[in-house]
Length: 302
Image 1 (cartoon, rainbow, N blue to C red):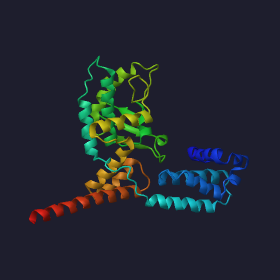
Image 2: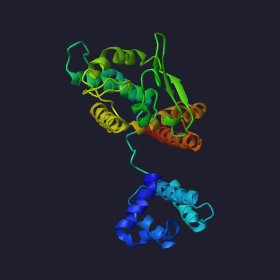
Image 3: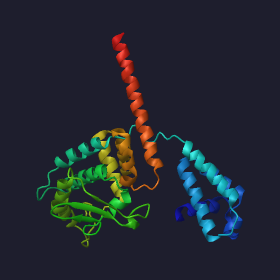
Image 4: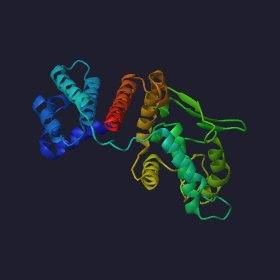
């Protein structure tokens, strides 16, 4: 909300700096609000709606008795436009989670992590492990970057558990899962052999799970860049960590309609409409494939 309101103030600074002398409500006229929306036309409809709604939330919270009904109607119009918008940004970039997992494990297993090996090889092994974990536990990139050994990443002789507290989830609800057995050996190898070597260059020791080759914590933005580059290398397509979440939802929907109910708890969603959207997308893909198969069969018969 701070970022959204900052965009509003930043726009005023550029186009009507004299409006800053007015109070927050006085400057927030319908005309200016509509011109701000028009100025942000290049944004995706969903982003534009989110920014507009957050600006209104800030003003409504700070001025509870203010009548902003007209502004809210505009925000609802933006929400409608966002719901009708069909984005092509993800076209060709939503892989099956199984494909992502196999590529990650294969890449990590090719890395040599013997003592004395170059740090580049170790960081590549780390990226393979990270990609594999995103494939099976598609938590948000920020939460992945905040994992700490002993608190949110718990490793014991028998199992590995990821435990996100309320502050680490978008919904504010704690979330916990056990790392699947398919990748547990890789993660143990990373924690026991690779991470200590990478951590050796750190100015100060820390408990962050993911470590750069210089020993610093690997944060969300750098993590996103690393995964996007690795997927482009392995799959010839740039797949960001966020698209791993889409892959998980679509994969579940493709398996069977019964498994769609798992999307919300897997991705920590409170709204079931997300699962329904992915189910519809997967069904559309299946319908197209079935139709193409029928056409092929008819051609062969002819």
